[in-house]
Image (cartoon, rainbow, N blue to C red; front, side, top):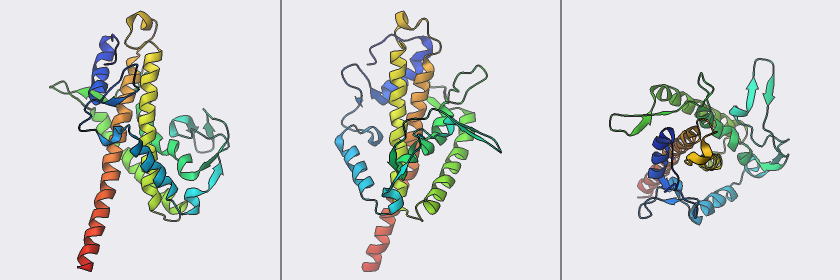
Amino acid sequence: RFGYRNSDGERIPKNSLESTFVLNDEEHSKFSNNDDPHPIFDTGLDQWKSLLELALSMDHPSATNRIWTCGLNDGGLHNLFLNEENLWMFDLGEPSLEPVPAFLTKFLMSFFHALGMEEDEKGDWVVRFEQDENGKLRLTEKTKELLPKVISSFNITVDRLINELFDGYEKVRVLLVRYVVTQLISDSAFCIEKWRTKGGGDESRSDHQYYLEKWLWRALWDIYASEELRRRYLTRMMFKRQLENRHLDSFLG
């Protein structure tokens, strides 16, 4: 599957990633079960086509007009320091013109992404999972405590952005969420590629590296966060539309 040997520290997150999807050198990713693909890992063109169609369907000026980014291409919470008087930003990019929803993507995804980059007392990233008595992964108690607070902060922020930047234009909500979900999956792929580049799973190349499994744990967290967000938002909005249709059918009947 991964096609590499792996250290003891890498084995658990690697096996968990393999159970989610299969990675190898010929294909970047594919379903571990093509007969019943998980929607969040849909590699077909339909996913991108529907996302582009959604972006192009926006008809509010704030959702279509472009803004000058001033280089804030990665304006996430993990890329800034702030206190009561000052704000410092780093990891800036080339200035460009971007639609507002696209510009907000890195900021919104960072509510979840920052948990994957929190440092422990050793300066390593905090692992958000632990094994249960059956060897399956579950969230740590600390993460279970933090996640509802993160989701609440995310919800409040999205609500305010929609009300203040988009004049209450609710149609943009699902676009923002789909951008965030896609960005989290993209970061997961980035982490796996980093692990490979640094010699992950190859003892002859990784002896000089320290704690390479951190990239796999972060990839797992990105996947979990993206799925949690998809489940909570996209499924809820689908049910909401179905309920509205039922009410309309009942009225027309």
